[in-house]
Length: 132
Image (cartoon, rainbow, N blue to C red; front, side, top):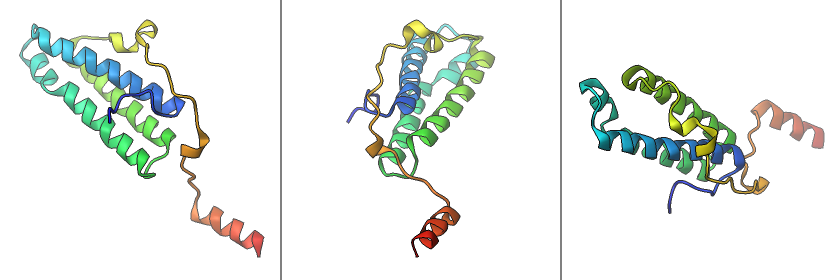
């Protein structure tokens, strides 16, 4: 199954779509190969790394180890770190993956049946006590 969607709840799909655009940008930059030594080293294999990271998060979401919101938050944090690296190593302050016009992947409709329910043990205990 293809990792990039649209297959996910809206917030997760937005982050996955951003990652997909970033993968395309990183792959194109690596193919051009005109960056300095450090830039080429930073780019080497980076697109594949992003794809594997997204695959791991999606696997966690599908296995109910993460909610769509926590998976999206983790992915956004990871993408932010990569953007910092792009700025430092490649001089890209506003990469094309972040520009509104490049956001072409539509989100799947939100289906609440796929949201994980996460409650604290204390909250569950309180609910049990109320039913007694």
